[in-house]
Structures are given as C-alpha cells and as structure tokens.
Image (cartoon, rainbow, N blue to C red):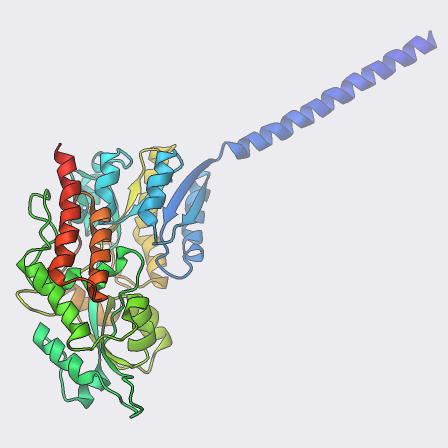
Length: 431
C-alpha cells in the first residue's frame, strides 16, 4: 500500500513539474512573441553626411518608444542608388519609407511603387511644408521634401581675384576672363599650380550634372525637355552653346585642371579650391559650413548663386521622403515620415547638416551668409522637372558629355547622340 502511495505521489510530482515547466515555457514563448510582434519599419536613405546614423538614432528612438516599433535604417550609397531601388522592389524587398530625387519618380510612380500622399495631408500640412508645390507631380503628391534650399553655388577665391585685380563675375564672359587670368604657374617651376576653374568630370554616375551642366544650360536659356515632356530639348541652340562653352574652358582657355577626367567635382572642390589653388568652383551651398568653415578656416571666399548669359539659373534638388506602396503598415510608416520632417526632428538633424528649414515652424539653422541669399534668389535656383526616364536620359547625357570633355566628340555630336537615346525611350511610352 505504501508502495502504491509512493508511486502515486511520484506520479503527481512529475505531472506538477511538467505543468510548471510547460507554463514557464508558455510564458517565455509569449514574451518572445510580444517582442516578435513589435512592428518593424525599414527606412532607406542616402548618405547626406559622412556618418548619418548617429544623427538619426535619437530621432528614431523617440518614435520607437512612442509607437512600440523598431526602425531599421539602411544607408544606400549614391552610386547606383535608383538601381538598388528597382532591383529590390522587383524582388518585393524594398523599404517602407524611402528617399527619392526628382529623376527617380516617374519610373516608380508608373510602377505603382510609391503612394500618393494627397489624401493623407490636411490644410495645415499644405501650409506648413515650404516646398510642397515642388512635390506635386504626375497628378499627385508622391513624397514630402526633406532636402531643399541647398543650391549649387559658384564659389570664388577672394585673395586670387584681388591679386589679379578682378571682382566677382556676373556674366559668362566675366567668368571666362577671370578664370584665364587666374590660371598660372605661381611658383615658377614651369607647371600650372593655380587654376581658374576646379571642375571634375570623372564621376561614374550622373550626379555631377548638378554642378557641371544644369545651371549653365538654364543660364543659356535652355531646357532639358520640351514643355510636353515627350521630347528632348537640350540639343537645341542653347544646349550646343552651353556645351561649347564648357569644352572651350578645358581645351581652348585651358582653365580646367589636366586631371579633370579622373576626379569628381567634390574631389576638385576639396583638393584644389578649398586649398586656395583655384579661383572658382561650383558645389552645394552647404559645403560652406560643412567643409570650408570646418577644415579650411583660413580660406577667404565668397559665393554667388548664378552667372548670367541669356538669363540666370542654378540647380537645387528637392529630394523627398516617400511612402512605399509595399509598406507593411502604411499608417505607421507615414506617421514616421511626418516625425522625421517635424520641426523638432529637423532642428536636431540640421544641427549636424546646416540647411534652410523645410517647414515654416522650423528655425533657420543654415549658414548665416546664405540666409538672405537663399530667400532673395528663390526664383534663381530650381529643381529638375519630374520627367519620364530621367535617370536613363541624364545618365546617358553625362556619358556623352564626358566623351566631349575627353576630346572624343564635338558638342553637337554629344548632345545629338544623348537626345537620340532619350527620344527613343520617350517614343516607346507613346506606343
């Protein structure tokens, strides 16, 4: 009898133990499940600065804590940026929140890859976002501007201009004359060591059109596409005049460095202009505070937004945050976009990357020297039109201009070939 009781007690002990373990396991599993149910939002951004992750981390952390979610940030290099998106979206692996520039939108809107945000924006939003009109494209609002009012500026070296008895240029002819006078062998060793124009043509993708082409074309009275966006316009008289002007700077006037074809424009800016070895350079207005004021404090320089030929014009991107159509939780993802663009978040971000504000309720934290210039010259700097096949057209145009600047083809040949390629792409859309 005692033996039976002992066996029964042992049996009950085992049952209770297993029940307890099962409960513990169930509790543990439930806890892991709670963690697993935390929603993830994938964000793709390009590198605006050298290391943006520490800048975004506190901004994202605040959102994560308030919304019980996890944000996975991936920084995508500028080179092959649109190709990365296209490949990922085709494979169903794109982000929830993305970052796109004007050239990218037509393709991805046509693919149905980005959401129209019109119905998600109220009257207050429309009034507060300063560059909202630039986001209206192809019948909708497919993004909200995050990078704006950072135009391409013509930088000039004050010391060099003073030594050769010149003032800042106003016209193409001023620029050309001063650049020729500034190009010289300053130390008498028989080699040119001071250049007129620190311009680089070696970039592998078309990003350097921002500084090397768009502004000059607009100053000549030209445009990239015709008004209907169905045919190319940049190979007209204004385009050929622009291309000839640039080629002459290199081959006739010899004011562009010999190694221009192996260097990017930013490399030329930092290795020549920033070190006082060039009279002129063109780059982002933010380079003033992010590069020159930090690392080249002895350089005396000035800036203008645009030279003038037939008119004025310079490039200024209006890059945007997009809500991707494949976002797992569109409401939460859009909420994150608004958090990223809020005055509080942008004030933090612009502390590291000084820019003009993108909303009316954000304080100005850009370069003090640019505040009035950006305000007064708003009609001079302009973004690209959102046009069909922008990525392909501009990339091919860049390659043809590189061939021209390498002495392989004439200005007209380069532009006609780029226009032929672009028009062929545009014709396919009408079939």
